[in-house]
Amino acid sequence: LISVSAMMQAWPRAGKRVPQSLSVFCQQRNKFHSTGAARDWDVEKVKLGGRSSTSGITATVFGCSGYLGGRVVNNLGQVGSRVVCPYRGDGMGIRHLKMMGDLGMIVPTKFDIRDQESVEKAVSKSNVVINCIGNPWETRNFTYRQTYVDTNEAIAKACAKAGVERVINISAVNASLDSESPWLQANAEADEVLHDIFPGATTIKVTRMFGRMDRFVNQYAVLAQKYPFTPLIDGGEQLLQPVCVDDVADAVANAVLKPESIGKTYYVGGPETLVFKEFIEELQTQVYCSNSNAMPVPTKIARLFGYIQGQIRTFLYVFATISEDEIIQLQYDNVVPNNVLTLEDLDVTNPTKLMGRTLESLAAIHRGERGPPVQMPGRRTWDDVTN
Image: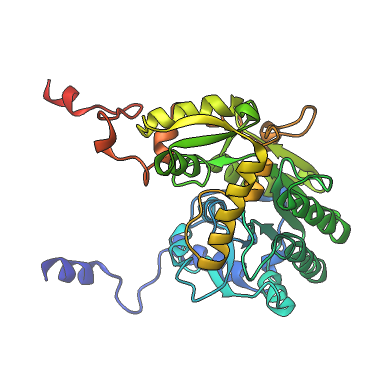
């Protein structure tokens, strides 16, 4: 009661003048939320402050509830951007995004990618549109083509009609129309469709992403725990260049502010190149699976295993460790090619390395009873405290 009384006494009485700084902020904010001013922005004049500042950017982030999309929303919200978050369902999956920006700056809106009118409504007030929609497996409702090609076509048409200035699309490094993987084929076709309709679109092609609670490190950790061996396709000699999801989110946010990125394609990978077999062996030591070994498996048998897992997930909606398409992708190197635009061109100069930080990605997998206490980098163990 005392604290409430003190707060009421300190609060300005009715009729008193509002502080000038607050008044100016409200005027700027009202101007920013007006329909006409939201699209009048100049990249060269953007002032990036805190979450209560005004960047002049209004961005629509499709796939905002996903692993990458949520981090993109956070990066934009923290510099005072208004972010429109299209969602499906009842909205419970994106309610946490409202905390990533100032009051009223994170705007959820219901949409259906098959309803062109709802897509146009989601981008109608934005000057930047970012597409993070993706799915590593097909479902009964959406095939790969519907997830990528049809989605990119709907978003590109809506952006062209609304006069959106910037479109940024997330794709895959190995995307190719000649690939044996239907997932990579769909990504490549979606990129072409987007650039045909919206030539100024920026494409960011990423390698496998890792981070806390990811689907890369955790996926193979689950395989190591559930099965007596982890399959190695073609001996596990493929090269990986995993990139931290936070670095990708930073690259997307930086691309928004770089006019020279319009119409260009960037290949985003991590700072280290790993051999798949060595990565699996290191991962098994981290999760203390002494009964699991990395074992070479013929490609046909591995694809059959992945096909069964995929069917179980599609029809029974239960967790599947790996799909047939992911087995196909494991046959090829997943690295950034030479002589292309990379993370450094998007001003990400100190990317995060995977090796030595795998435990941070295994919060849901690692169990202390499976081995000795784990010492995280930069942290003290209980023995250090007691001694």
